[in-house]
Image (cartoon, rainbow, N blue to C red; front, side, top):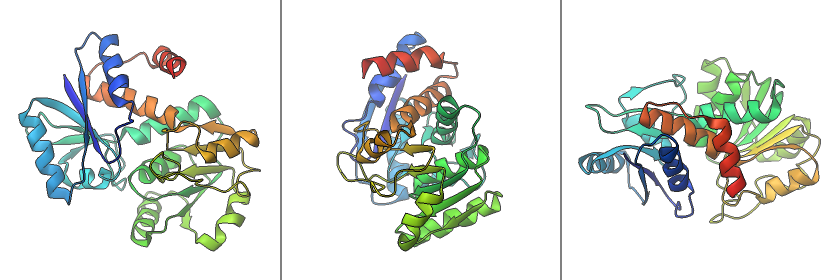
Length: 275
């Protein structure tokens, strides 16, 4: 089974190791390739998917910055909320493109694993792009009390707030001037931006903003311990790392690609031990 990942700055991705290990677990010969590319528009993404289909690929994962484009061009969407607006897993070997969003399901799994039955409470999230959309709808599934969202790009921010409100998720946009105050009033902090990634270093939340919450999540997993996560460790907060999301979304994606179930508990401990 030939699979791949489409995105930018993905050369350090561990997706090939994860999916090829999953293939060994299920006795499915699996090849997973990286397609690090700068695509000009949705049509370019569609053309790439058609090209990969012709080369015998079963499916691909899609990451930053192409998840919204994937939503727009995929015909059949499964296990996704109507307003989610982003896909990260696409089957390309059928008559029509089909897809789902395992970032959303993977985040829900990771949250429940580390926070048990505790509700998210009030949450401040930075980032309203593809991964932000998935996490926001996942928080809705987890019955978030109120989700405050910040993004410098206003069209993304306003569109996500509107879509969440249509889905009856309590949420609102916040400005940069409100961040310090809102952060201190929240139970959870979420980074759904690339800040902290090895190509875009920095702290998604400042040391002054981190503290007093119960939990944090950082979608970045290269490196696993970002500056934001390091601040949270100093405050002894419950940490859901981007690596946790990576593992769980990958398991869900491989099940989608292969049509077979994976024993995820043993796999998570095995991959974590190898990191």
